Image (cartoon, rainbow, N blue to C red; front, side, top):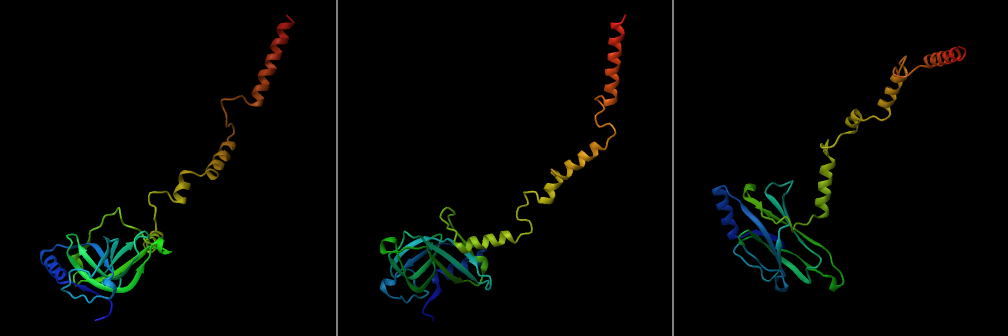
Length: 224
């Protein structure tokens, strides 16, 4: 066996078998971390408890490995304010608190600010199942943290779409409805090309005729 490993526990194997037989699923819900009581523990499929649990939280995300359909990557984020302990072991539980997987990880110290530094720690634990349909995730969306990789993947997928914003008009569609220069200029050209673009108004010739007629009338009546 490798130094660092993930094991399907006996309880987990029973849960998987039941789920496969009854067309249900095993809801992976939480990850517990432990310090191994100062050394790497020797867990077996019969193990149910960590040597010394130091932290427990809901799973942040679970994704199927793109290259191996039998592998799932379980992700746990430990925030900056949590720590000041070593991590050497982990346990993955279902929604009922049953230990489904247990394993040993490379020792790592999780600091807090009082220790002189701090950081988010992201643990990605690979678990294996022969039947992908038996794995689901129970998660509270209010506690999920978006990692940088998650955000980058989301942006890349968004930008790769042919039309990422179908609710908005494209430039060509907008130009069909609104063309402040082209349409306005064409309308003005058509207007000016009319022989009499404003028939409701007098032309200069008609206005001159009215004025001349008015002066003639005044002169006529003034000399009677």
